[in-house]
Length: 152
Ligand SMILES: [Zn+2]
Image (cartoon, rainbow, N blue to C red; front, side, top):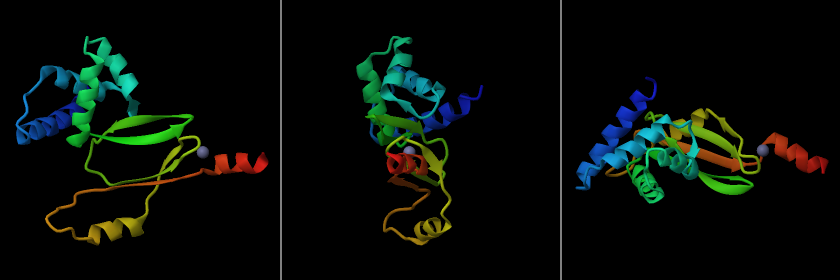
């Protein structure tokens, strides 16, 4: 099954985090993580809560698990303004550098490849920190939205 690989990777990271922080292993939390891996990415907390409801997992448990997954760097969250702002969550499936431009009006996301930024970060040294990858999000207005404003 395709969903198995990201789940295994995410579970490994979760168990490492739980071990480091001396937390209890929770089967329900693992079930939430399973649902996260089954959802199309990115997803909202509402969407996840709905999926978990079918598994009889409470909304409170879902929100607690989301916070934990963020802390454990299993998920990353991005707030996008599409009429009403809802936080979207996405699995960090690979230790990959990502650069995106995001339209704040319509929420359109495009991948960009900026070699200059990549080189800049890679050459940077941080004391007591070993950087593996990074994310860059550039916010603004896409050409479609800009055209709409000009036409008005
Ligand atoms: Zn736009």
